[in-house]
Image 1 (cartoon, helix red, strand yellow):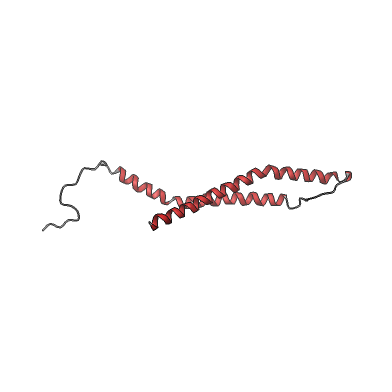
Image 2: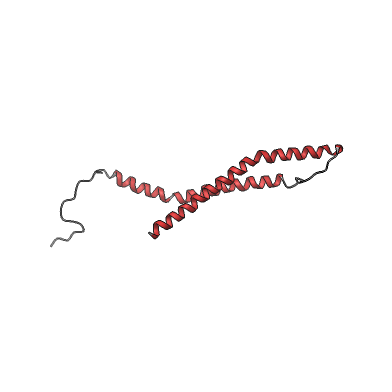
Length: 122
């Protein structure tokens, strides 16, 4: 009696005699599994940049006045407020871009976990 773990008939020739495809396939899966920590690191970096920019903008606008009544002798305050407003307007596009980038990366993280849940539940 012959005991074997597979079929007793000869196996068909594979198209990968050197085993390159199987090594490439396992390497791709290994690289795919490391995408989650990379995604979280990218998210943390983008979120940190956003928080730094928001903090900087907050320190700039901390002493900004909403309404100032100035006469000619308080011209220096008008110049200070104009310079402050110019700094805030200069940084505003970067703040908006960092908020948008954080939203996009957050959507990617959420999308990955939703896709993973659907894949495992199916």
